[in-house]
Length: 511
Image: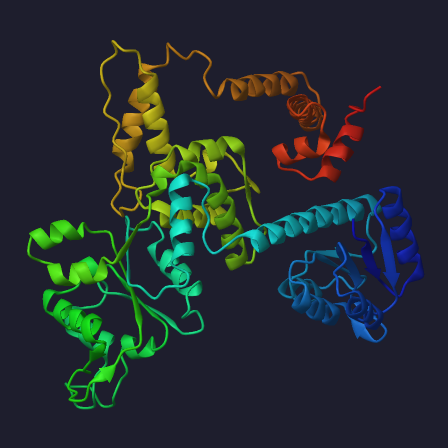
């Protein structure tokens, strides 16, 4: 483990923290001013595990040091100490990205606990960074996704036109970007346009550009997406919804490589690779007469089908952890972890909105889940309603009356929660006899025990129940991991230092 750096011009503070951390078997390194800290960072080019810095020192302030350190190592937890406990200092410390603010004089056990938390945060950050460094632009272990990856690899030296099919939210643009990134045109631009999101009257100008005076409001010449993508790749998303008359112009570009700006008379050469995508059945659209057959064959040189998320359920855990990390970075908060039970329940959801919906769920959990470890009860209502409703129906006795579980569409804004909730309640009631061990029994037992202790006149009920709860939880975890503490800590969602300390406090050390 890397050392904990202490920056303080007060020798007594450095001495006390060094000795206390050494007793915890945590290595330390001390400095008397910010200049020496920055010099050490330059020399080693590696961040410490945690930085504990005073706010006022000769030759600079802890806040200035915080700013410079965070610019180089954004994930490094920095604890700011000060004897001047004012609001401005605290606000400035947190605004600068400090992990915590520690006023002097401090209680040593509390200071150590704070440093332990910072160490655990640092270790989580290291794991996250390693994971992100190993994470490619696309994720997937399912066989269907491996087929997609193989196809991207085979097309890596080609400029051929590709048609990507798949449901909305399945990641078609990610595949298009990967095809571009691993193609001979990787140094050129990647330009994307959703042909279904732009009004018909504007789409032609968006694609091909326009000359000055071509229409009312066209005060200057404007380059379209084809010109913007010169030498690179143009991604035409939702091509199946392109207006019929514009399909003719697109076919001409694909056929002879030239186009005209709106209102223009000079042909513009297009040196562009086209990748198209759709969630529509283009063969059916051709039969219906709303999509040109000759354009379909022009686009359908190589077809890649992207599987729906429900077809690759084994990828849900990996994608969930990735999106939780991503959401935390976007929001500037500590990444949340998800329990195995919550992952199992999430994996049983059908995800009508595919990977995009899973990403939105993870963003929702990052904001709304109350604790750092996400449990099944923390999942969004639409997930719980659908999954619990299906489970309740599956467990119902064969001769029981059928219960229709209404699963509201996860992406619809007018979801009828009342209908879904009522259906789930009815389904659960129908299997109550078959499942006497209800999930909330332990909570009822806890309530009864708490009531008994409170009525007995004891004044340490919180400590007593917390101790018993932690003891049982840790012993159970250690039993499932055959005594492996680090694995048990991981399963519980706590740090290895925390579980070691709890084992000592609760007297669980092996005799």
